[in-house]
Image (tube, rainbow, N blue to C red; front, side, top):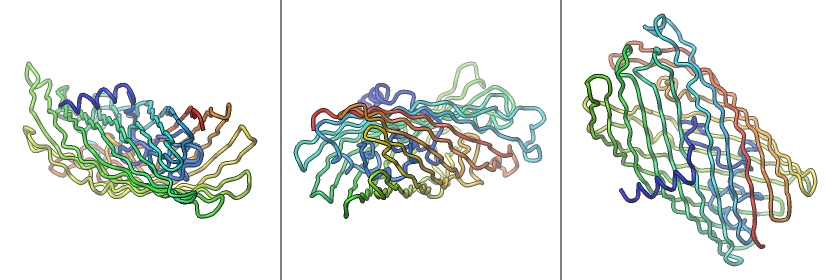
Length: 412
């Protein structure tokens, strides 16, 4: 319990409000760097001028000069609405579609790195790797499946980096993660009674990575974030069926996926650098998770496939103070058609991004970026436990993302 209290406090101070709709496939949050977002995260694991690459590759800590600090702030504006198919939805003529389930979100992150000497570097990053917040307006046709879904995380990763030589740097980190889930649904397709499932836990993992500069103007970064297991403890609360709420202690074991990220930066001219990246996430770890202690047989059904992210971008040094960047990406969602619902109406998506860095002084830089996500329409076909249609249709979604950051180095 003391660990949960500590991590809850860190979460409240460092990443409060970071519970937006998920924007990196399933319920992961990719939005960890205003600098990298400007190129749709192309080359995100290859540090460039920002230590925010520590999220993907801890070896990026070796890019610090003296004491370097960065503060990143992302604002996410999603829209997702169900177009109901009346042939799949028994109550289509009686109830609504739930409205726009997307909730605007603020996702902060921070990075600090210190150069001990020419070879040794220390750092720490604070992030929210996972987050989700959707809400459907009751009464609606799928209320017995979804009224509210919320995932919150806070991850602190102390990091050590070692610069072997001018070409090769290595980094490792230990991740301490607080993770909380809260799901609410109606007790029946009609009526106001509700069922609320919640649980939280603190888990541990690690990060590892390297950066390699084989030639002048070429930088390759490879990073790994381990899976983290969470034994969620919480309760199920049933309201509206009895004069006082009914509570049942429950538990569920969740193993969040590991991620491998490859990033490349290749200088083409003195002013232009080409960026590229590939990322794999082992979402297939999440199948069907039984909920222990529930009053009736209950399970969290994911049945995800692995997620992939492919990105390409570039940056152009306009002058000594201003650098412009842009990029695009294609992301394969881990959510399959047969398991998609309005709780998380995720699907494959295209990223289009622009960004800029303005160097205020030798030590101070500002980053800003904007992305628009074109999300493919997603088939919705949610069935009851008896296999009959519950509700169905098409989820139509798109997302706008704005991000800013401040980077400052004390000394050199």
